[in-house]
Image (cartoon, rainbow, N blue to C red):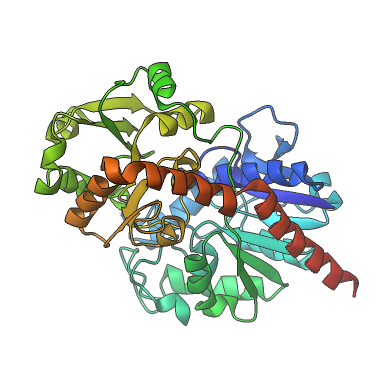
Length: 419
């Protein structure tokens, strides 16, 4: 069986990492899987970049320009929505022709247009689409937030500067309907929460929607000596270390303000002199000064081995994100035996079992987030939570289980084609 996994990037972003790991996992379990990407960032032989004649720079710019014009030449919404109005035709590539299954992942920002997705469907090859956010089941947004218009038909989009009855979201929703009608797609959500949301969309009515989680690299992410990990990274050997990681620290969706409020809470006052905040990402001097604990800034980290050592070195990982599907960071931290704290949003409650292997705080409740940090750092709880976190990761997101679930889906689709 040959599977072509299509994603905009090979390694940048959560979807890219998940797609790359799935490619490796499938190859480890008897499937000939290959990635096709716009941005190749490694020397892996299982990843193919688009041929040089496919210059997608103009596709990307044309899409941004179209959004900019629809917004009345204002920047709001310019980077939070995608319309897939331009992209590459991959159907003539040998990687596509040789594949038995076409497996789409995150294909935005100029990789595939809706027209090209329609052409893929018209080829007759079975298509699987792993949803890393809500874009496949909405018109243009990746996170619908409180909006439920995608249940029926998108319009008056709250993420546009100039919403209206037949705004850009209405137009793209119409086009997606026509595109999806050209064939059958098996949608796979990374979390049960996202699968439930997708089934509510009128775009996906009559389509197969299932849920299969991402996997992780068990060779890198596993429990080990905390002292050795701290020394290898130059972190304090004594005291408690709390990790916060964010590619864009100033992204409002990542909830840094809630973390700052939690750290200032009376609930954590007893940890003064014992707790250090470790931050992956760039913090400004002003933000650092606002944090009432010592801060160890790691900057941006791209090496998985370094991130694994960091999870192994800290005592807890906190993710105050306001919008999430199934964060790789929580999976990786738990695999290393690091208890996690996060809000009750998206797929997070599926990952963290409250007070069993971490703490799930009430949504947007900074005080409850502080309670969670206190709970997982408490010596009476930490060892139990750590063991349970590592066990949950090994049982739920292991490579063999995730591969088997996808292979079962592929075989079913191929069987349906031959019947």
